[in-house]
Image (cartoon, rainbow, N blue to C red; front, top):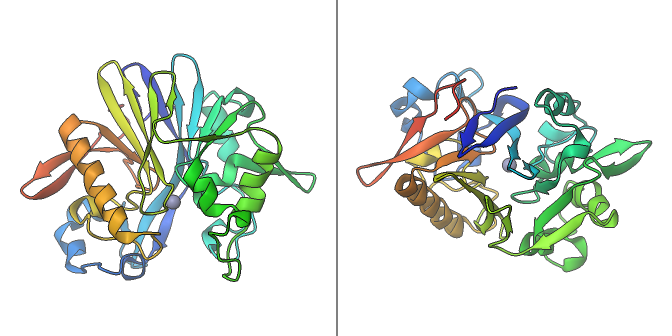
Length: 299
Ligand SMILES: [Zn+2]
């Protein structure tokens, strides 16, 4: 499987779980402007918006980063067999994701680090897999790096989760087993890995959400997780989702991200953009515009 990008000699490979019509614009974004679909229709349809279904098409994928010393997985998708009564897209899925990882030349035991941008169920799923009725870490030799405030946000013992709300048990099946196996490491913003990767705070969607900066050979890429869900938000950064922890903070974080991508020429690698998945950001008047990478050609 060809890398989606090579940044200063560090290869980045996208490991896809699924792409499908998923989110209804007006439900996802309370401030959605319907004429935006018409204005951007030339690049939006059919890849990023399904007209028949009236939904955005979104991808769920993780990124495999091979630095000089380590294999790092950023975001672990929804996983297989998870019971998800609330988020049905991820309920008892059966995806050939580990086969795709193998096609990228990596066995689970070769993954050295796992970084989850946040602990929503579509970012932690492959942290574990079901073996003989038990959730066990998928990557037995990896250290799983979790941002300390994000752990506090989701730990049912921490008091920040309303246990009366219906919720998916992602902590119980995808985070707790990793902690119990002794593979979890709580990290603070600014944490560095191999001189190439830096974990940085990007709050709003969740309060402990992080982005990961890859800097190598004078080039830069930013794995931004869910700072943005769909590419239209490049043009409408003030659209926040209906499930952000702090919508106003999320808007500030998104603008900061777009600013720095435009300023530094960084490649943007979100977790849910449909093909071609990665882009650069350029300034356009008061706002921003997208420059997609060419599909099939590493950017
Ligand atoms: Zn997500």
